[in-house]
Length: 242
Image (cartoon, rainbow, N blue to C red; front, side, top):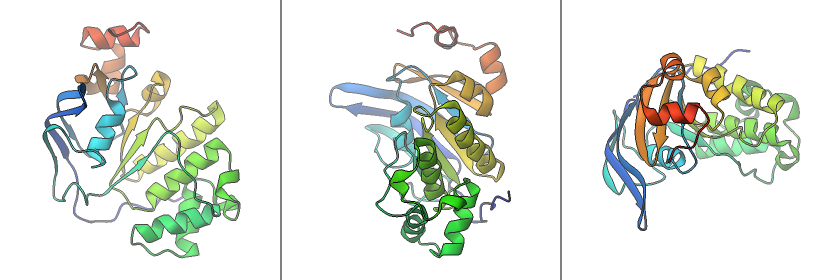
């Protein structure tokens, strides 16, 4: 299957966090995070529940504003940079599969015809289901449709927040296959997951968060073979990080 390459436009990358903190009421969710999201293989965010993975993604996409610190995009304003996001449980519009993609193309300001929409559906393996009501798809098919809608934005960076957490192994593999092809086409993937096997399969590098802090960042192979920090070693051993 051919995958459309990202068009040559001004880049959003790197997206840089400079001493970024985020608080919700009296609760600190993230504390003084410094990181740079650069082009390259997928970056996987891992860590215990409540570590701040979803918050980090929402900050990076401009859905939340930091309580302190700065988030900078290379050449574009954070509110206009070329990102898309897929959440754990996507909401399907009350229309056909292809109608969902046409709507996404329209909102992205792209050509919203059947040919363009069908090509996007082919990228996620749903072109044969184009006329089916979107809400009648299986959970895995809905997640792939959510990916097609995100790709309708022609993103440079695609953020994924645990997109396979409620899927069976076959559906998970179908979604992972789309992610691998999308990364191979030049789209930067930043993905949160609780599945360490998935992180091993997909990650080029790993960001480990715990207790609202960025504890460790490393290429995937050395991270999983010999994590440098006690909290990461504890987490990979299956013990609680307290």
